[in-house]
Length: 451
Image (cartoon, rainbow, N blue to C red):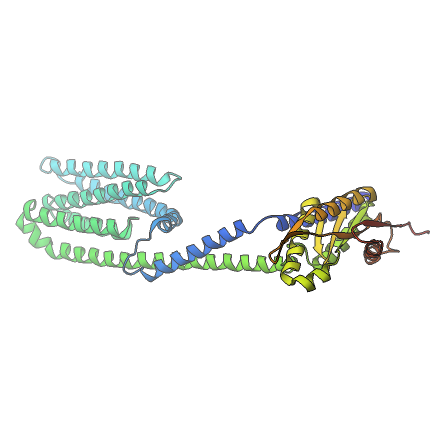
């Protein structure tokens, strides 16, 4: 049981201390990183909106946005590489089967062409597989892959078309159909850009036309012309479909990117609202509500661990007179300067709060009275050394504070944290009644209840 209680006390101590440290880190850091992140998000959303507006006229993105799109589609392109490799393997298998199934003595050139096509597809597949398996994804790599893919596809179209011209029926028809399928594969299977797919389709079509005009018998072209023409038309239709699908894919990427940017903006706005709920906007210290919560948690923690807790209540001397005579702007500057000075002199685990109009409070866990008084005196001296410049009065002004300190080692609930706060407040008023610009303290005695 004692070990379990010790674990609970340890978890409670870590929770409160972590909250205090994070709170004071928020107090001390500037808004530079947050504003830079907000600017990046706003700039990204503006780039996304611009890209959406001109998506039809210019499908390709600019700069970093294009690289992000290519990186996000890297896995899908790799899967397309694998599909293409399987398809090429099937085409080569059919090609070699037809070639080896013919009369070797009369069609030895067909066997050679078939083997060369298989070797070409095999070597190209190895290259594409090596490029696709790399972890990195960059523009030069994509360009090399595109050039090799277009070249292989064009050569396969030429090889299949040539085989269709020299092979007898029905192998001739199969090869010519294979040439048309290779022509359309650039738009369906290959993970190419729209520009590279267009180059592959046009190059393959021109190769077939040149092959039909100069490399095939006239009878073969007339007999296979309707099939080839249909396949060429189908390839251009798939090219148009490929462009449309690419635009839709890019639009979906932009919409998803914009949604993520909006979610990040919303999260940052919520974090800012959460900070505003605990931070005093003028001084950057904790507000009264957060101070009450942290004082209660610190009190419970000190009671559980049987450690001391210190509390400082600070009040600016003659603040009302300065605020009424010199204006609220000067009074606000006093509050900012004093709050900054206090936060610079305390530990990261302490909590500095603006308790009231011109009052500050400091929660100092695990602090005995002598250390508490030393810190309070150091704060008083540092504030007295601050010179505040008033635009209406060229002479720098000095400011003093009165401090009430209270220390306690809570051991029972006979006196709670509210009474502890009241004792520190009484010490503050005693310091002000004693002439201001001084530190007075009170020790709150705690005893274990008698059984």
